[in-house]
Length: 312
Length: 312
Image (tube, chains in turn purple, cyan):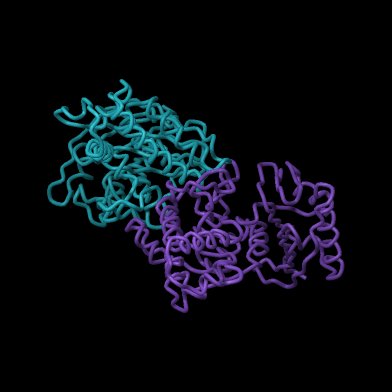
């Protein structure tokens, strides 16, 4: 076989998502293994190495046709591949070096949100573009900056920490990061709920949100789409913050495309359109028409981006 | 002579600043010529070409030892070198191509604020760093993003338009760009005066500012340093906006260094220190210790950056 292959590995707190790809980005097979965080996470890399080796054997792949393993980790990757990932128990742990020793394969490693951005830029919503910004709205808000088809990591590995851009200097409550008024406080899944609770306290307007057993981001957006005035105002505030945050990013980076991903973005077009209208309000005229789209690769974005790292 | 030389040309609305450099960045000679903006600025490039040719002759330089001409222009440079500079009368004018034809020399061209950032990153306050952000506080607020030692221009040539980052969603007045609440509205020379006028109206506290013949940025900072409580509050508000803006930039780019330049920055250390304290308040912890400094090359930063473009 002349084709080249690569493995994409996206390490999460509960599962490790793994994929076998061709070098053109065709996902041939994907599977999960459990993330064993016991003993400061020392079993994670060996179990990944074993799973990759098993896969190579099962497909009788020739190792010289394997480009290597790209790996995304939920934390910070410093130069030299030292990983600090609180959820995995890793503190300056040389994860890529260890995986390289165990498999004999080339290993590349980056932050998982950065890998997801690279995946979307390569074969998702950003396909065809070299400079792409992706923001991921999940439990928290993360992101990645892709410049010239590569991850821009920054000097501390903190570039693309889009969730902690200050957007509300008047906020008195604390963000998880210790600052006040970060974008994440309003546009993460929890942030969306925070906006809802705040507005429900501000006004007396009746709304199905008042009697809901549990308020989450999806319910807020579903009710907004159905026309509930309270939910519409919550969606408007959400979009105002996110549109302003994206305008800041666009004024600084001037990318070809901006992609919105993560669980909160599953609402899709109504969210995209409302965020875009606020983006256009706040953005400098030269960057006002930048394409804003919803991510396409879902939870697979990370493993796609991991493989893309092997091609550079 | 074996040494290599380069010309740095910074085109402004009233004067063209020109410099002859060695390839190591030694400025051998600098001079100005008048910017002739008549007839849609068609005389500007020919007069630059003549001035360069005269200089080559006078020094009897061998043309094969001349790396070329780097040129900074006060406006937008699109791919292919088409320049739109309102103050020069240029609308999609192929300035670098024209200069290349007239001189037979290699020509590189970029936005002037980007060139100044590159100059400071190369041999000014950012010396030794590859990823540097510079913000220029002048009549307006501009800037430049240097990544891996090169200008990041962005897809529309608008990267680094730092003056138009939205920092105050509650602003009702318009910025020159048509938006509201841009950083430039508070931290340019005029913006600083706007902050002063606003605060003087808000309070009754006596201050020398109330009887000043003309309020400008320098007077505000001089009085703040002297301890006038009104001027101190104006300086605090200025620093709060700028510190927050720089924190946004740092959270996105994670550069090695941030440089503050332009006329307003001439106050130096007191301004730098106060801006830094607000920066640290708003910045994400991973980027909180990024070095913030005042520009060192003054008005020459542009011609240094122009020459640096010839070395890549």
